[in-house]
Structures are given as C-alpha cells and as structure tokens.
Amino acid sequence: MQAMVYRGPCRVRVENKEKPAIEHPNDAIVRVTCAAICGSDLHLYHGLMPDTRVGMTFGHEFVGVVDEVGPSVQNVRPGDRVMVPFNICCGSCYFCARELYSCCHNVNPNASAVGGIYGYSHTCGGYDGGQAEYVRVPFADVGPTAIPDWMEEEDAVLLTDACPTGYQGAEMGSIKEGDVVVVFGAGPVGLFAAKSSWLMGAGRVIVIDHLDYRLEKAREFAHAETINFTQVDDIVLHLKKLTDYLGADVCIDAVGAEADGSFWQVVSNNKLKLQGGSPVALNWAIDSVRKAGTVSVVGAYGPLFSAVKFGDVMNKGLTIRSAQCSVKRHWPRLFQHVKNGVLKPSAIVTHRVPLNEIAEGYHIMASKLDECVKSLVYTSPH
Amino acid sequence: MAYLAQKPPLAPPSNELRSRIPGWGVDLDPKDRPAVPKEQFKPDATGAHWDFPERQPARWPREKSPEHAFLTPVFGTACPPSGISGAIRRYAYRFSEGRTSHWLLLLMADRIDVMESRVGALLKGRPDSRLMETGVLSEFKRHGLRSRLGHHRADVKHQWIDVLLFAAPYLAVTAGALYFATRRTPARRILRDR
Image (tube, rainbow over all chains, first blue to last red):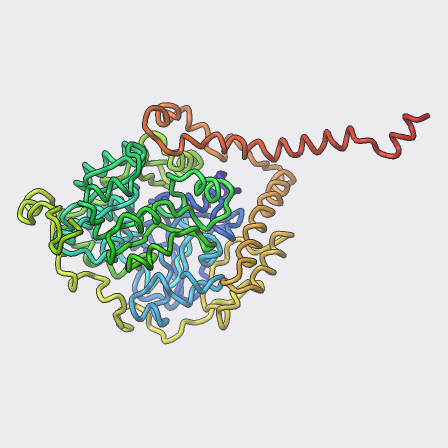
C-alpha cells in the first residue's frame, strides 16, 4: 500500500509499505478515504517530538471504510464507514472508565504521561497513522463510530480531532455568560475554540495571531474580534487596555509548541530544539488573563521542559486546565451541533492534496503558503 | 475598572449576542457540558467487553517506560529499533520519563536515525531527494513569495536562521576537510624538510 513516510526533519515522502495486519483480536484494518494534516503533525515534521522514527507514517485525523476485523470485534463490520478518534483507548482502564480516553493506560508502553495516538511518534505508542491507504485501528469496539448518513465526510474527519479539541479548550475554560475569552492562535483548533466559546455564552471573543488571512477567517467563521500581535507594541498591555485593566476572564492557548512572537523562544525551541515547546502563547495567556482567571491549554507541547512563567500563575491564583482531547465523550453533543447547523467543521478546509503529493501538502501547511488553514489528504483522486 | 467591586461592562447584552451569533448560548449551562464534571465513572458505556484486554503478542523485545508495571496489552509495531539509533533508544528506556537523560537520548537517537536512514536509502538505490521530500517545489506553485511578503508575518523575520542552520553542517564538513588537508602533519613536515 501507499503511505506517507517520515524521512527526517522537514522531509516526508510516499513509499510502498506492507498493508497493516490484525495484531490483536479487537483490531480492525480501516481503508482510509480521507485524512488531514494537523497543526500538531508539524511538531513531528519539524523534529521536535522525541522518538519520532524515520519510516513512521503520521496522521491522527482520518475516516475510512472498515476492511477487516479481528475475531473479538462486535461493534463494527467490514464495509462500515467509520470515523476514528485520534485517541487510541482500551475502554477498560482506570482512565477510560472515567471517560478520560486521552489518558488510556493500556495502549502506550513508551510513556505513562500520555495515552496512545495514531502516527504521533513512539512517545505516543509507536502506531502508524492514517496518512496512508490502510491503517490498523486497535480496540475497534471502543474508538471508531459509524459516520451518520447525514454527515459529510469532511465534517467527519474534522470531528476526529480539531473540532472536539477546540470545543474542549473552551469547555475547560469554564466559560460563564458574558465572559471575555481570548484565544491565542487562529489555526483550526483556535477557530473551533473561538466558535465554541460563543456556544458557552461568552460575551466577547478575541482571537490573536500574526497571520492576517487566518484572522480574517476568525472574523468570518467564528465571529470574533481579532488582533494581529505584530501590529501592536505589546499584546499583553493591549489586552489589558481592552478589558479596562482587568484582564480576560479566560485565555485559551491554541498554539502550542511552535509559537512565534519572541525571538529567543523561537531560536531556543523552533530552531535549536532545546525546549519542549516555545511557550510564547502560553506566557501571553498567563499574563493577559485576569487574576483568579482560567487558562486553558490545548496547544500541544513536547515532553521536555519549557520556559513557562509559572511564578505569575501562582501569584495570580490562576486555574490552569489542559488535556489532550477525549474525543469520544464530546461526539454526541458535537454531532447534534453539526446536524442542527450550529457548527460546520469543514468550513475551515482550504486545501485538498492527493496522498502522492503529501510532501508539498506538509510544506504548504508548515510555511503557511497560499492562505492555508487546513489541508486534507485524499488517498484516491478527488 | 478592576479597582472597583463591579465588573466593568465589557460585553454586549446577551440578547444582542443571541440574535447576532449563530448558536450563542446553546451550551450555556456549565453543568450540561459533555466533560463536566471532568471524571465521570461510566465503565459500561465505553464499548469494551473485557475487564482487562487480551495481550497482543510481542514480535520483538518491545521497549517500554520503566514507569509502566508491564508491557501494555496493546502497542504500536511501527519501526522497531535498529542500528546505533536503536541501541540508544533501548538504553534511553532504562530512564524514567522524569529524567532529562531519557528525552535527550531519544532526541539524539532521532538524529542518528536520520543519518543511518540516509545511508541505508542510498545503498538500497532509493536515495533521499531534498527537492521532492521537502515539498519545496510548492513555493513556486503556491505563491511562496506572495504568501510571505507584506503580511506582517512574525516568522519571516527570523527565516534567515533556517538558512544558517541548513548550511551549518555543510560548512562544518568543508571547514574540517580544509583543516585536515592543510594542517602540517609529521609526514608532510618530513617531506617538506627534505
């Protein structure tokens, strides 16, 4: 089968790989019809995530058709159209039993600090991902769900990570009616976090980024106020003035490891890879939120240390909430929102690339060419 | 202002927002949000029909974090460790995730893995192509210059560092080669002295 393969920092290519096989009685093999390149795939692509091995196939956002199932699988059958959450989860450990699927303890031998994620390095379990013609899906009775007939494929693929992650980002902010919410990052997750903040009753939603075209998207898709941080002297001070010197009630970091805006943070992390992530957006969130406010972190960071201003967290009495999204627990509500027309996840898709051009797909996404917000990858001509 | 007891009027009234923003307030009640409370004990609702999963057979001694009591019942089988990078990775997994050595060894193994793979690909007759694998050709098809210039992009200001980092290994190798080629070895000194 054809699959995207990592060849080292900033290098990927398509290779012929062996089709995955059933390795556990509750496995399924899914023929991928559509996958996505996630902003967090870029952390792997740029060589920031430890134990990212040459030869690995990335891709944790994908949908497809069940091709084969193991002997103990009961809930899906060959031929079913399924969407697969990016979390690999057993459904029976301490964490899964409490609906914390992203913390599953039975699927990642390489680390106890994170669960299993498709195509996201050996630090997340060493599973090949879905930017390929076929993918192995462990615990087929727990993760995958049939795509409802009324749901479009491109909406479904965005519901496997970006949309629920943004929604959970807003939810972890414990937003109350009339709250001022500042979202750092106008990428896919930031756009969904901004949109979801309104659903939870925010009074103002302000999105910060340095890419004008993404801020335009935030105004159009998420009805947000926007600020390009390169156009103000000091974004923290600017936000303080906007909030009458109180600070925002809730700040959401939807940027993560490769945040820009501080020369030395960018050099030490993005260029020299000496940190687990450049916490520029996180530090701005900490500084911009009001005392006793909440900072919600859904941007992904690596496991190494980062230069976070934790003293301010303590002094300001902040609540920091963070998690990899437990996708499955959000699906019933998000399905309802998509069906009712409250959310249209595929509205943020800007690029569609065939699998055999995936190297260009990554470059376009990483270099923010051609006003790229979200790229989808198709395994067959589209 | 923050200096008085009442919150300043920073937001428009809810009625106005409800009429202007599609879906405003549909999840207003914090108690009626999907992940509230954070931990909800629902072991029968996950789809699992086992107390503990069957164990996946291990086809090689699978590396595992010492913070796990045993090899997890299910695990990924992509890219088994091999070569020098594989040996370093196996060694790294002796350290807990709390030790910086664990992560730095893994990062070092990642870089060595790249070098091993480049040589391996060359020997197998499918050498790496910087042009094709970096996707840099999309710069010409997807408005590389127009996407960067005149848009206040923060990243454009430090892209010169990428050029330095790209050139650094080549410059180092060239400098090393020049040094060894021109230094005064004992043999060369004897020849010259004759």
